[in-house]
Figure 1 (cartoon, rainbow, N blue to C red):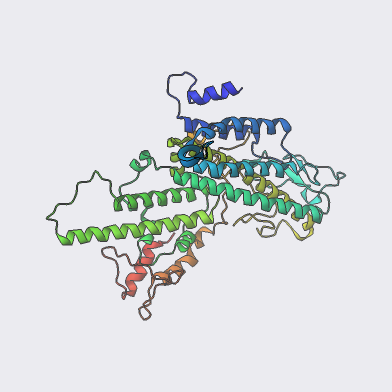
Figure 2: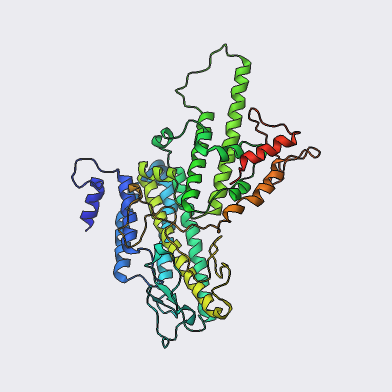
Length: 489
């Protein structure tokens, strides 16, 4: 088996041997992803991993990670001879990023397996979708009827608890395990983010960018970012983020605009140097344009950060996937792939625990719920509003290939899995953005007496005036700008 694995890695997944395979870094990343899909799947139930699968996971991960022992760097060290003399020599040591992060990932891996092993003796059990228990099984009566689950997760079994719910001690243990798994998830996400950030931006991605930031962002977002007043939270409240695809599209657009503006601020060396007889006015205009682009890039970056904070489990962006596909560094590929699959595993464990806690709370308070109750969640995920008879869906974050009954796919093949979109329920179409429009009308209308900006942090934002923009004293012009930013539906 080991010979087969390493043969595929050396061939770059090209079984014909014609040299058309992928690079070694991408081949290892794909192997880690597919191994995780084979062993763990999507964690349908909270139960210990079978011994044969656990042994398979540890054995093959050691095979895939053994190459990291030979990724070294030279460091100065002192060698002592038998006669007591010392000599400074260069010694080999594992590369610093692998030396720091790889033991941490192994520790997180063992902790996740240990958490799953602790679900050997439990008070709860699972029932497949569409199978209803009899009245004499002693199960939770609030789930005699089928749950309204998302159709995309029809294969997930429904958790069941005894009548009266879980005992207080069992529930506290469950919440403690959830908190531990959440800390593991945060650590894995941090390592994954650092690994992606250290990868070089591929030239293919830079060549595919639009010519200017307005083409990348679109007219609405561009006009708001270039306005005198800017608040990323206010803009996100107005934008349509009701679907995962829409939020991912906005993230891709904002990320592309950052690179467009930053690349124009720092042009490549191939550009010819300025002529010595260049007028000072032209130089001053160029300096002003560079400062303006840098400011716009900073604003777009703050918008992207707020978007990722609001939706922490958003799918990987186009830049992230392009980095994974074009990366040639084997060490960074190992760290990115290993942290991504651990992130996926931790996320799914948290989702299954949340499902169980929701069912337990629903059982204990079944007398307080009715089908006509409003959509208020008893146990909600981050920024999620869950209907009273639905169990929240979950999948793999950051475009980890979907570990569903279908075969696991590699991120390099462009088959990213769907992730739970942690979003609030969108407002009705006729009232969408009404409150935000009113707030931003006052927000963009600068008080001529006080002369202060209404920024969120209380700090003034540098004004960015486009040609033909209204002056600060023209109230009608300011209202016109607000109407242009937020047209009627």
